[in-house]
Image 1 (cartoon, one colour):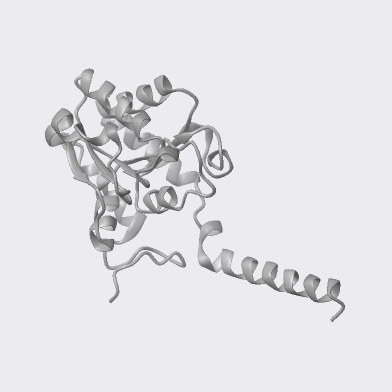
Image 2: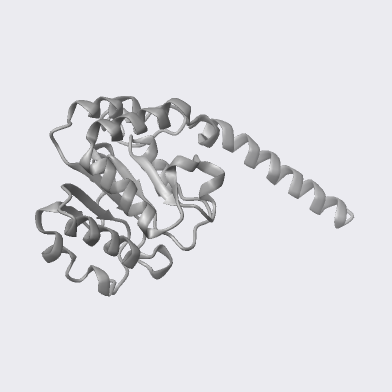
Length: 214
């Protein structure tokens, strides 16, 4: 069986998807696993992420973090010493193959966006589908997708959210359960989206044909 996320149903072969991820609540002895799955470019604001992680570290909060995504030719300056600063808290750093990537998502607890530019946010939805509670800025496309409880306006708000969850695992599990009880993934599945795209393409072709007098 091919290892992949099947958006028509559940992720398969890699652990059972967000149904499986709901079983993570029994792992309360492990620190929360924070995921940042974005391109290592300026518009994804890696410096904002680093500032947040270092502030949590300064407050002696126990957590794990995976900084994933595509690396550019030059590593962002803010990432150069992150391994030395976070030490064993940094469990993944850089690009992972597909299977390893989805395993990391399935092991994750919170997926973070610090983006200053985003059209859709597929990586965030993938991680949420795998059981990671999404946290994103209250701007761009995110307010159209996620509830207010998943959005932050300032760096202090983000730090406070993560701090409270890291210090209080039962609180986090409660908030994660509430998110999944109310969030509907179906409207983002290929079953829902492909027919809409096909209809849009057909309409565009028909309109082009009429305007060209064909």
